[in-house]
Image (cartoon, rainbow, N blue to C red; front, side, top):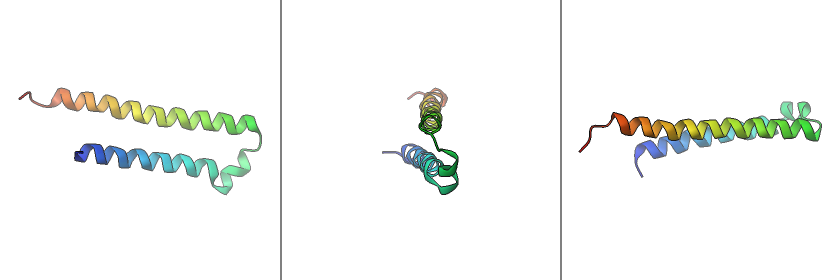
Amino acid sequence: MDANYEAGLDAFLAEAKLTYRRMFESQEQAELRTFSQREVRVFEEGRRLSRFLLEAHLGCDQDSLRRPAG
């Protein structure tokens, strides 16, 4: 695996850790009391991670377009 893959994986894992913290830190726990509040937060965080992955994947397309052929 190349360095771009490893860097991308590290960046994604950092985002996933942030998501986990946002769900489970004590301050957040106090804000998420109802099932609906929790569900909304989970969907928001899931969309944020999905955007991250999509942007990273699209970035790979951009990188390949910039590389000279051959």
